[in-house]
Image (cartoon, rainbow, N blue to C red; front, top):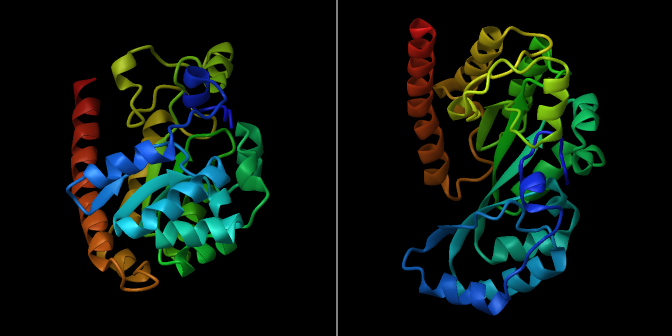
Length: 264
């Protein structure tokens, strides 16, 4: 999709690479665990091939999670086959709920659909959603961060990543920020989606990081846990495991960030 912030297209090129479905099935059959993860960036990128794979997986009676674009909600046959093949969760890159931000970064695939309807369709198939959002775009404001947290709660997303925008070298985002003199440093070890390495337009780096931690705290607490309780109690243990894991991880992230500020 060649989004401005994404390193995948500059590194691998704008093309899909496929392996024979028969070979993929051999690997799945060899797995001893019943639950596994597809790490492909977009498992449903070629809908016809994905349908072939999912249909062949049904007899295996495995459970799986994976990554895909929101466009999977447009194809009811594809969505049904995914559920029947054992899909219990999908990581989906929403990136932003602000149309102007989506336009500016080239995330056209998300502009032509209504998030709420797409989420509802996926939930109806018994599939959990781990939403991924990025904060730090030029169109982001304190108000849009608050609105995103509210969106997550209202749409009862099972889990969420609030990523720090990171201008990875080779991306259009990096080139734009470098041209504008907004790259703060080139300590590559900190280009990790956990540190702010550029000058945001509407925040100081410290303020943006604090607001991201605020968003996490608003999402991963006992009250929000109840508000976002699963649409069905199927795989409820997955919901609890994911959320309590984030609660624990958030405390560590905040401690690490505080140590780095003290060490400056």
